View 1: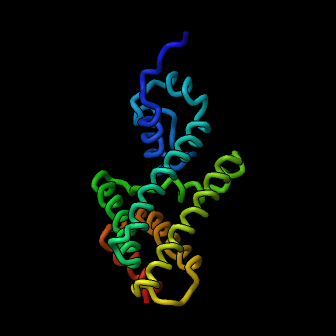
View 2: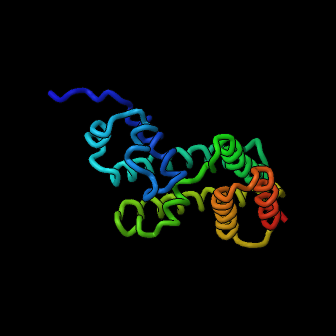
View 3: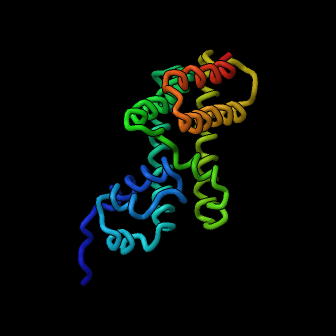
Length: 200
């Protein structure tokens, strides 16, 4: 009988995602991952076999957790469609504010992965996770935009799908710009100015 694992896999995946989202795959060392997760290298590789496998599992966990949180915001019937989009921006800014206090940007594992196209080429699973997540987020945001048009908080104009991509672009751009050290409040003003093009 094998020895029981002495760590929580979910906690390890969350810790790994926390490193990958800030530093990306290439610039995250095994030592960083072990320190962040509080596990030994042997334990890490016994559970996940390789850094690549850990990345794939952490990415799966990350996109599921982010989408669950976004869904709770974007399907909140107590808010107008426009307020749901603003709340989504506020969550991202809140993460950046917290991370800025620790001397770095919050980052995003999805944005980091899209900015490293070689990752999609090295493992088809990464491409599949990213593509599936993009479709799901686009559909979720498009539904919010349709709801906003019904309640009058979002103007007619571009299609809901194009509006969804605009929101994704704004938040992704926010994550990238935060890496430059721009103050969170300035990021908020810029992001909301971008949203105003959609809200009309």
